[in-house]
Length: 275
Image 1: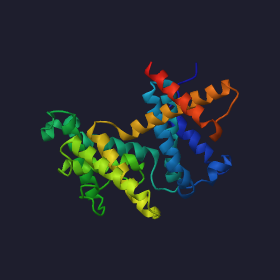
Image 2 (image 1 turned 90 degrees about the vertical axis):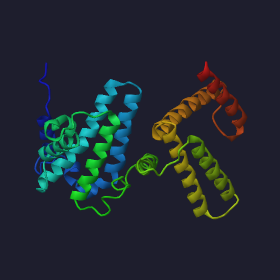
Image 3 (image 1 turned 120 degrees about the vertical axis):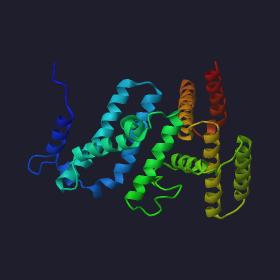
Image 4 (image 1 turned 60 degrees about the horizontal axis):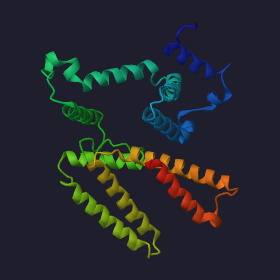
């Protein structure tokens, strides 16, 4: 049986790949700037594959996807170490310090008397308060703003929900879900009006408002909008695959000339889901 690999082995592999004399030519060409165009989409893709593995209870896949995410951390830490900025140990130390700092009720109850927290909501509130204090200590512009620190790089749907939750904490929110539904209808109506216009900017504007309102509706219904859309995507893929299979049984392929048959097979696929 092989020895269980440690994080040190992973770090050694990454260092070997970046070795100027015997490393990998592709890895050696990389820098923070060269990796930027694919780091964000790749990392986001891996993060969503982690989420998909969790949703499907696929533990083997989850283990694999977590490893892919860890690679991103190790790769960037290695490059930073080479230029003397920070090391992987600094990354670990930083997150350890942050976890202790943001959980005073666990790690410092004897000092602050914070051992008694009523529920997870109180913990979350304290977490956000400490994050705001961290931004202020770093001197970030607008660090004390209600919406400060919501990363621009987040997927738009996720970011919309985060912005809305931040605003809701200070009372800027709808009181009833019916009001949110009314807002969705209002935005849909305005989208319909732009269909007769030739101004593409107006269509982008109104459709954006509609999507933002839908994200707000999801939040009020207690639904994760991003997860809901991922589920809808998978449902569409499953149904369309059945449409293609049905056409194949008939010796046909998808196309405008079989539109009616595709619609019929689609309804059949929907009926199978209900059964």
